[in-house]
Amino acid sequence: MDFKKVPFEKNLIFEVNETFQGIISTIDATQVGHLFFWGELYGDTTTDDFWYVNEENMLIEDSKRVGENEYILSLRMSAEVFLFEKMFSDHQLEPYIHVLIDFDMTGSQVVAKLTFDRYDWRHLNLDLSPDAVWDYYTVETVGPEYLENDDNLADIHKMQEYADKHDETLHYQVFVDDSE
Amino acid sequence: MEHKLNVFDEKIERQVDNIFEVINNLVDLTNCSNLWFFGNEYDGLSSVNFWYVGADKRLNEFAEYHSENQGIGEKLTADMLEIDQLLIGQGDRPFRQILINYTVNDDGGIPKISLDYYDWPEIGFPLFAADNYYKSVTVGEKYVKQSDRRVVHEMLAYVNAQENNS
Image (cartoon, rainbow over all chains, first blue to last red; front, side):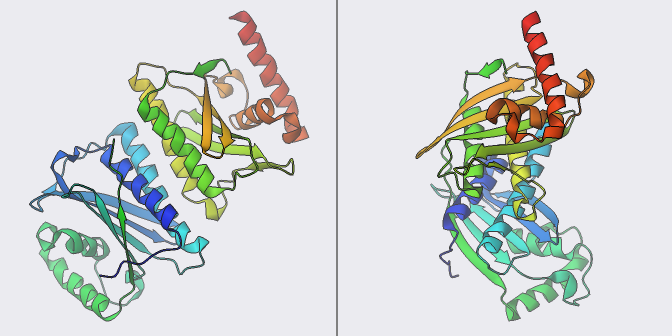
């Protein structure tokens, strides 16, 4: 995988760190191996989420997203989706639709691997189920075993096949300052 | 504002520094010596703003509704709400208004924080008038629209009366 040098590297590092800090301060990070952040900007609407696995790649669902903290976190995550986009538009670069960050916490330093893509899944005439977009990024990160419905795998395969033929992704890598 | 916040905790400090950094990433503060961040929190309705007087003596102000600023308002709001949560965690009462004056230098911004607890709508002023009030007390009323100044004067009179009573 090729990691590119970006014209907005300083901002990218800042926003990646912000994303990491925003999430990590609300969860019990002791068991986390990889933390995934996903965001979509579609028109003016953002959708976002995060999930994480332990070092054996088992999904952990132990989030303290309650009350006021959940509201603050949702503001932060939505802001990041806009601000990643802003880096592209500020530099007259073609906008992305999805951002996926894999925070690898298994080593001595947290490494963030970012993938921006421009797959407009809803308009590709792949006849996808409503959950397919969501499922695709889940499978890409933690594999098919956490899909709620195995029938959706057929959709994922169509999407993977499309992605193999049309690479519309950009990959970056950023080191995260996780010192408290 | 009477309630100066001097006691710092590291987490609050991080949010306060963060607000400066977010603004500094957005606008060019090279010729600016003072920057004000203002946050208003009212029963789940929050708003944020920041302003500074540029070298040309004009007031530069954050416009949350500009599409290129999407995300910035959410981020500043999140930082403001987090400061409030951290203060509440320390046993403080929740603030309604927070004003941060950053003295800008080459290394960044040195913050002075003030908190207020005015329930403006309950007192009889529109919620959005608070913005004008704090602009007036920080950079002067010439930066407030003439038509909005009467309300600002009434708010100042109210605050002075309160402070004299206490």
